[in-house]
Structure formats: structure tokens, C-alpha cells
Length: 436
Image (cartoon, rainbow, N blue to C red; front, side, top):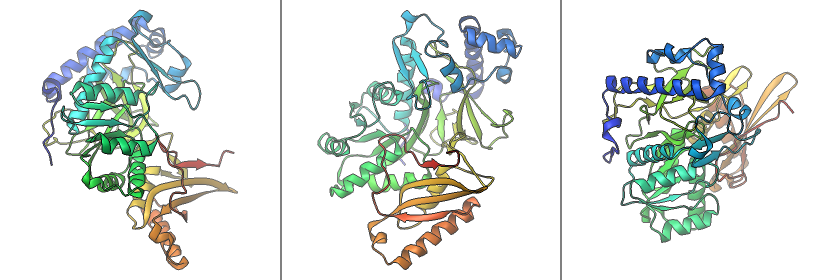
């Protein structure tokens, strides 16, 4: 394992007690700011009978109200901003696929903070000023492209703003510009590998060695596929626009949990039903409070992402708390015949089975009062050419494995290679017909 670089030792290896003191000071400043500058938070804090003077310890975070994506949409566009318009130097927004977008703003200090946070995660993932980084995230209102762009430049790397899509061109740039690091979603990384293989590209002969992926949950099995096919070391990074964008946490080269930038974000994991803290090591919903954001500070933002905190020290030397890679989202979770199912769980099962490709669709339907699940999965060219008996045997094998691991029965349909839609950004895995 290569040594994990540390971009800012002052904060990334800060002793625990010093970090807690810093967090408390910054939490108190943030609560004071939103109470007096953001009418929404003033009303919400009055509802729970909390004032800034009540925040005397980090445990008092539980006295504060939660914030949800709906709150941001209800205050569209600038209702949660805590600074005057003339201090805003950048505006980003979510895609807004289910309504109005969520809008976030940045002061110059916010931009500087964001740049450093990305510099930390890319350094942890192996990127240095000797690297050439190809960013295949979309540019525009989406925070991913610009966030990674400025952070990689901040460590001195050469940046190619390729944006998303046009995969053949991505491959041309990768070869001609001697790219050493790729930034995109894990799903798109697999698509790049697939098209590259079709074109006869031997990735072992390219200088590519790092992959920094985020934007969607992905399994360890998918990581192994990406690393093998692209001949790289693949790390996960996490962020969301409502908090700052990418840069909230990221894996180091130990690939043993994502280090959270705790000097800038106070993280909690709560039971999504009771909102009480979960026990150590138990999975729940990730909640963040920003500690340094100026333009749009947020209190206890419910991310809907499911993860847990990890115990023990990381060999890389960082003292920052680690979270497991996100396994799914509350709003992505399917409840099928009383069983909670995340797409990433099915993905892990599929990638364990020889001949199955990492491209699948889950179709949930209802016959009478009974939920049904169909799993459509691509198979390799060799498998698809096999006799019908062998295909049926594989379908039965996949169905048995899903039943064993998840405890639910599923109809498994094997489909021809390259027939399931590919996505340049986040993959859309689920078709739920129950509410039609």
C-alpha cells in the first residue's frame, strides 16, 4: 500500500480533545449566526425552545432542530442564506428532478474552505502535483465537477475538465494526455472500462493509477471490478451540495472508511425513525451540522444516507472520525414483503457470481396484495452464448443467492450484454411500479 499523504496535519491529526474544543467553539458561533440572521432557524429553534445560550457542550446538538431537503426547497431560492447578496460569489443548485432545486451559495471564504477540503481528500487518495487528473463529472450547477477541479488544482495537479459523457472522447484524452487519475461516478468508471475494452485498449499500458469516485453508493465488489478492469486504486469520497459539495469525507489509500472533515462538519448517526443516536458501530442515517460555512450554514441536515461510524485508528495516522461507505439511502430503500432492501445489496450478490455483469435493473411490482421483485442482469458474451440450460441454471443460482443473503425471493432474468441503459452520472437502478 502506498503511503497516504496528509495535506493539513494541523487538523487531520489533531488530538481528540483539541478537536472537540474547536468543534464546540465553531458550533456555538454557527448557532448564534443562524439564530440572529436566518428567520427560518430562529422560528425552528423557538419551536423546540432552544436559544444559542443553551449550547454548552457538543451533546447539546440534540437540542437543535433538524433540517431537511424540503426545508431548503420551501425557502427557495435564498431564504436560508445568512449573508447579504453582495458577499455571495458562487451559486450552485441540485438537479431538482423532484421539484424546485435546492440552492446553495458560497462566500469567498466558503470557496477557499471547499478548495482545501478537496485538496485533503485527493491527497489522501494519492493525487500529488505530479498527477494529471481527468474530471468526468458534469460541470454547471452540480457541485461535483467544480469542487474536484479546484481542489486538484490546489495540490498542483494538472486538471482536464472533460465533463461527463462522450466516452470515446474521454478515452482519447486519457491516452493522449497521459492521465494518471480519473474522477467520476463508479458506474461511469465501469462504462469507460467497458468501452475501452471494446476498443482494444489495454489499461495496464496506460499511466492511469488512481480513481476518485463518488456521487452514488457502490459496493466493495464493484470497487474490485473497477480496480481490475482499469488497473487503478479506487477510493470513495462523499459530499452533498446542501453541506458544501464533495469534500465532506473521503477514503485514504488504506480504503478503510472515509475520514470526515470534523473541523468543518459535526457528524451524527441517528435512528431514522426515532431520531435518537444509534449505538457505536450501528448503522443509521447520517446527519451533518456545518461549523464554518458563511453563506448558508445548516443545522443537523438529514442526508438520508445510511452508514455507521468506524472504531479504531486508521494506519494512515489521521485522527478524524471515519464513516463506512454509504450503503444506500432511506429514500432508495425498498420495502419488499416487509424486508428492507438496498440496490447495493443486490449489486454485491450479482458481482459475486461469475458471468454476471455490473449492470442491472430492479423492477418492483405488486400482484394482488403481494410485492414482486424482478432482477434483470446483464451477462457476459460467453455466458449469453451458452445453452438455455446453463442460462436457466445461472438464473436459479442468482435467485438462490438473493434469497440466502436478503431473505426475499426474486425472479431473475438474464439479458444480453449492453442492453441495460448506461448512465454518465448517477445510475438509475430501480423501477417501482407499485404506486402507478
